[in-house]
Length: 99
Image 1 (cartoon, one colour):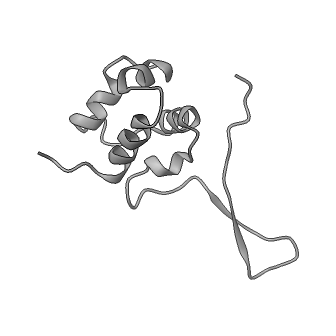
Image 2 (cartoon, rainbow, N blue to C red; image 1 turned 90 degrees about the vertical axis):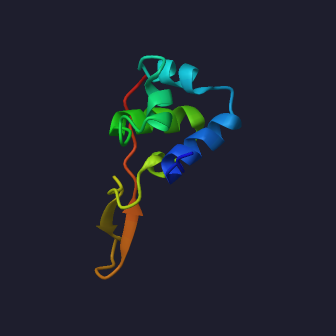
């Protein structure tokens, strides 16, 4: 049996605590019913795309970065704090489009 990477393991754990299964969550994010099943069991796609990651996270009420593979770049940007040149804050991007 293959060991799952952290994003896939996390997805399965969150699903076990939700009202969704892989099929219903796939359909809810606008994909075919087998999309997340194939992601978990076959590794295809290798990583969830940004839009899929954000949609899944929104439905499961979690940060989309938990579905990133180790070493993948976060969408959070580093910015200087007001009045401080040497400090930096992480400011996550959020989707503010109406649904």
